[in-house]
Image (cartoon, rainbow, N blue to C red; front, side):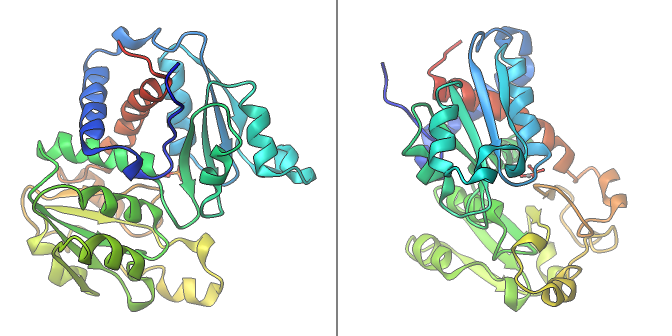
Length: 308
Ligand code: CP
């Protein structure tokens, strides 16, 4: 039997493996019937200690579309962790019932720790303000489908770059591609963490700039990745209220943007993209939601060692 593979950090997958996952996801989107029994008799557990709409439901929808079953919980209060059980014991227990586990937790590093107690693959479905590797796979599939490539572009990340785990994982993934220039647009208090600038960008000599002006940055961008200010990570509500509406992308701000700009957002959106932008052909965030299911189908098959 092959060794258990987890997905805790996006760098747990090589660039070639990510390319293969994207190719599988494209085939799933084109030929869904081919995959409808791929995971027959397999069970996915979704252990969500933090709220989710897209990640949990796309994982469950993905497993059902592969012919498998799903079990799990959507809040910590309905699991025995509320009675004092450790996350390690909870995960050990669930790994006796399921073949693969997707886990979201508010504490950074919790899925990594949980993986030490699991007999089956663990997928990090978001850990605090740290990482969100399956959102990154979704983002990469969407960029590939919209742009036809994963390299040689300028991408702007706008909003909460400090706590935005989807930003951290995507920066890591794109740092391994050729010719990507990064523009980080945020208020001073929500800048990209130094550990990413030092250990990922500077260490690899990758070009990046930081600005607080979305208006000044937008004309040079090929991709604009908007993010929500992460209310749940703030220690102080006054700071959240002061910062939450710093950036609102509307149709006026898009006037000087490139005609083939690709607008992404991991969602949920609060105020940072006006609803009118949804009608703009450059808005790709609803396609991103759909792509999340295809790429998670590809990932589940890969981690279970299933080939079609
Ligand atoms: N993008 C994302 O993680 O959304 P949810 O919080 O709804 O899962």
